Amino acid sequence: VAAVTDLPSQDDALVVSLGLIEWLSPSELDRLFALSSRGLFFHSFSEKHWSVTQLIHRAYVHLSYGWKTGGYVPQYHRVADIAAIAKQHHPDRLNFYRKRQLRFGIFVSNLTFE
Image (cartoon, rainbow, N blue to C red):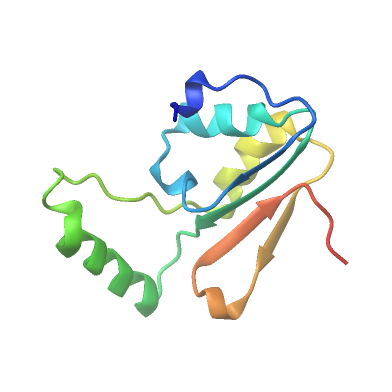
């Protein structure tokens, strides 16, 4: 167990995270994408957009634990913001995958699925 900023480069490994991006600061997000700058990555994140489903989720998070932790709640990100960070380390290939059933969940990867 380590902070993202303390992890060494993963060279050509596949770096995967599910539910992590929401909890990282901008500098930690930069480091996450830098970890796999010579390899592959597959991450999930909660897309920031206004919907009833996301409003319910935000209320649930706040009532469940956000108020107990002084507002330490997950971040919701715009695709453009994640793309801007990821492209600094992966300028050649960046794919976003959406599925209606995921509501506001989205995957970002430099893998190609056909």
